[in-house]
Length: 359
Image (cartoon, rainbow, N blue to C red):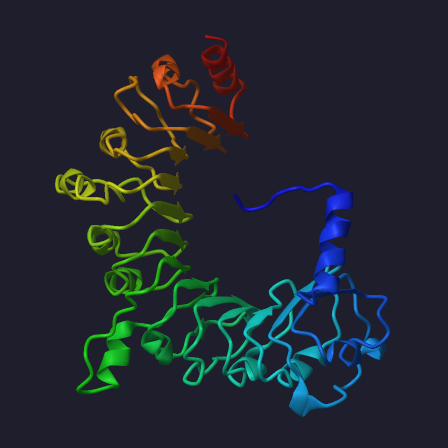
């Protein structure tokens, strides 16, 4: 569950309780003195806009106890000077400023207590001092190619890594070569990995054997897909796999050896999303045998299938499929199926889903 809705009165009660218990300080753009008003706060959420004339320096920077700051703006406007003031919060553990198109690369490396960071950067960030980081979400603030620092491979506590395009994760082999005598570098605690357009995806996956969620978004012209498929086999704990391709030929999943590799995928996979893969039906049949698969997104062609295929399927998502005209009626025999969601598809496909619903 990613989001939920609550009654406005319940929301007000939550805000009142957080204020009474000093759990979190919620502000909006009407607060006249931003930093001056949060000197004694532990956690701050700022909503809406904040103007330049509303920013004052801290009253006593040596005594600031702020550990969590989340800046959310519906208008995506924010004074550029704010990111330099963030460095004053020496005890900060959570920095969530992803909604703002500002460069925070100059201050992140100084916040040595950070456990969670979501920000946009334009330059390389040294993570040598940030040994407590568990979640890293970096997106680009500009349009330049940027390689992440090599010390990301020495962050043994990292659990969630999301590096957005055009940023990409560096080659772990190069990190090893620079540290002669060290053991091979693995991120054994990493559970969620989203490597966008990294030319080293296969090697990265091999160094993260305990992944539970993997999202591969790639629009490069020559990805090494045989190596990537090989690397997926080592992910025995994988539960969610998302592959989204933009520039791929129809032979990506071709070959006699591929069915053998598909059979070796983790039986723990529950959610599978394939977009732009041009995956042949023979491979889909193999994927249908995954014993715990309950969410499937994306298909170009669907041949007859029975309830023996996808035996645990609960949700089926089909979107942007101009060629798919029909869902096999036998899909309706799957006892666990409770949702078919269709978007930007043909009317024939929509009618097919309605027939399954009626039956």
